[in-house]
Length: 251
Image (cartoon, rainbow, N blue to C red; front, side):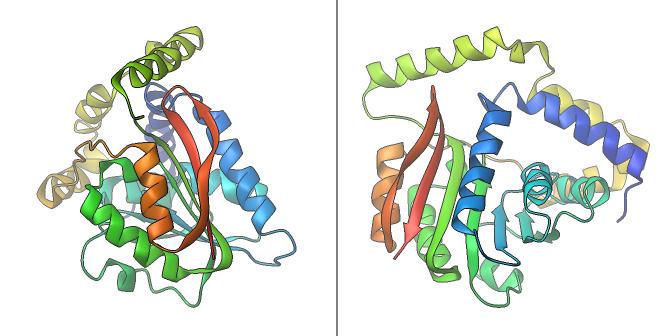
């Protein structure tokens, strides 16, 4: 189902504001992800990128702005967010509906050859550890040697006291940036339910069960799982509070 550009612009722009409440330093984090992708694809005429949990195309739009020749496949489980992305950023990516980690989801992507980079923002934290382990192994096989996986997400730390301090640091920064002045997740979804043009997509979303539930795999455990999956090196390259950009390089 297609969505008109004015409707997509209104709701995606509102989404961008809402997300600032949850992704601390969101715009800077996007910039860091683009920096890494640009670095690892230097000299590649048409970089190939896979965007996991793409939502309405927020990261894909920024990446293609930096790398206009990039070929991006953007994946999400939410039919409404995908429809908004296709309408708001139609030339940024090829959008695919799939549930990350489900049996057969890789085949749904219809990739033609290895990719240079796999990126994700605020999406992989909801995967349980056993699914994350399997998914990382699958993603390793999709990357060319030397390719990277970049996970920009809010991740917990080992030790309750340090985790609490990291959370406070992030909250204080968000307060200084007035991020909490924006509407929250629940308010955005409640409001979009009243958009007549999107009624069918909202109903489809409810039927598909596209809600996410949070998990608590620590950043240290993410690094361990990435190395187990065949990544030579893995570690954070940027952090504010519990908001990270975690990079892993394929052997």
